[in-house]
Image (cartoon, rainbow, N blue to C red; front, side, top):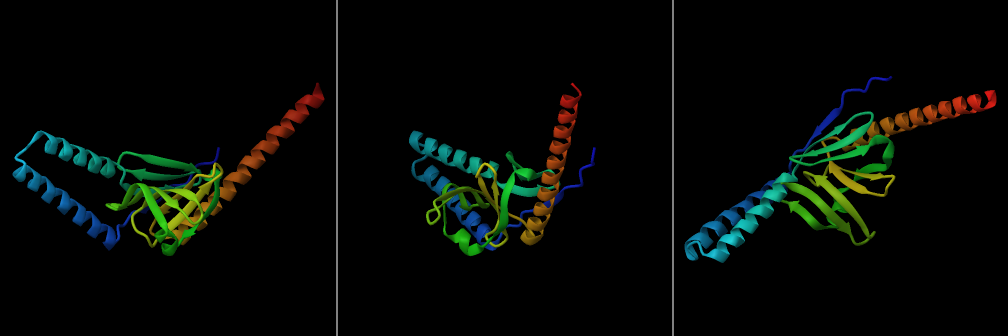
Length: 194
């Protein structure tokens, strides 16, 4: 059996815009919490409202993407709690995704700048849904698998990521084809002997 190579790790680096949006949102939440606490002096409804707001923020924080691993069998997007796995042989299309293409996407459920860009985004021009795991809007890669799920991830070097993913995909598909052909040949030989 062939030994798997060591995975390539692509870390997320957040852009200035993401840092600014995160800072502004956290500042507004803290000021809102302090303001509601002083003005309404801990009333029942304000406490539930703040609790709901903190729960939503915690859910966002749990989905923050951390890094992407690429090896000869799988692409893994690691978040704080979640991990998305795309088998390398299931990749149908992979390409660099431009910043201008990303600007036309609308976030449905997820974050647009609060510790990155992640969640479900919709493109009204092409009428497609993307699952986004990005830390900035400049270094993006779009991956479409054979099930027509589309992912947008960010990494340090998108061109190298695409090149290596295509090499790994083609190698894995040829291994699968070779294995299937040898299994078929063995089955044919056993049938002819009988």
